Amino acid sequence: MSLRARAEHLFSVACQAADPARALALALEAHPLPSLGTGGAYRVVCIGKAALPMAAFLLPHLAKTPHQMLVVTNYENARDLPGATVLAAGHPVPDANGAVAAEAVEAVLRAASLADRVIALMSGGGSALLPAPVARITLEDKAAVNRVLLAHGFEITEMNLIRQHLSRLKGGGMLRVSGAPVTAYILSDVVGDDLRVIASGPTVAPIGSKADARALLAARGVWSDLPEAVRGILEGDAPPAPLPLAQNVLIGSNRKSLQAMADHGARIVDDHLTGDVVEAAAKIIAAAQAAKTPGVLVFGGETTVTLRGTGLGGRNQELALRVSLEMPELGRDWVFLSGGTDGRDGPTEAAGGVVDAGTRARIAAAGGDAEALLANNDSHAALKLAGDLLITGATGTNVADVQILVLG
Image (cartoon, rainbow, N blue to C red; front, side, top):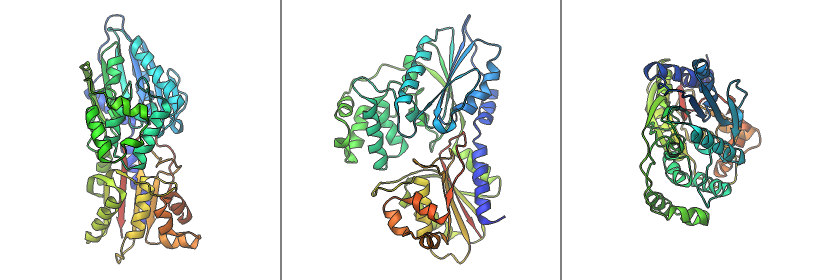
């Protein structure tokens, strides 16, 4: 097996380990569905990029009980599911279909009675898929906030700290709306598996206060870039009412995918690869230089990109391109893969990139200037010229990103 084929095989292993149906099956063995009250029904809301596989697994388990199921997922993963209502919405930028889906979720929750049980199947992507702006904020205001945060390299925890205060559903909002007790089964797409961060925490307490959000935005110098209505909301400091209790069950994570690759002979170097891709690339290169023998080094997490140009790409493509340009001569063959386990990196069709020592030369042979493309954040164009894009299609899961360095 070639080094490139081995990297791509291990990426497949990582995605398979995050299979939502398998993860939910194991979770239900340890944490069964709660019992219904007299005359009650299960009200199931499935939210995120992995919503459909989780929903499809659960449906047969509900066949002999009264139930209702609503699924909200991204366009790439959407398909019909007999027995459920499936709605598709925009990701990573919220859209009008997401606003409609959020209202549908609220309707299901409000209709639930005390005898019912709300089951929430949550996965990554839920934050953008359910834009439910609080009063005085428009959907365009929320989209503008997302663009500012993405452009300035905010990490997912930082982004969700801010977004939770602009939404009716995030930061425990689902619990406030629901008329029945809530049990959530959650597939983590964030490093550290903080339930407050996954899908912006609709079934758990917020990450922080409005004052915390203001302080962060001011420290990063983007407070004035936000819409006026958003600033007005964040300037309010009235404490929210206490949240109803919920049962939250973590069913899968990035760490489980790393362990699956380790079970196939890889060595886990870093399960918390975060921060700007510049710093991440330096860590990966240092690990490559320190390795004395052939083998596979794997990393997991979620990096960020600070936009300085007008190009097209994503954090995995930019990380892969940067490693290909900055890796020194190692005296051995190597291949580096960086990919999103959901199969999509940024607003592109690629999951990431697979590069080696010849990437720069292939870009040049195709008429491109690798350094200029990187400076313009145009990693997608650069890797396309090299034939180094990682194309998988939507995987139906999402446990953040993995990086695989194969050393000959």
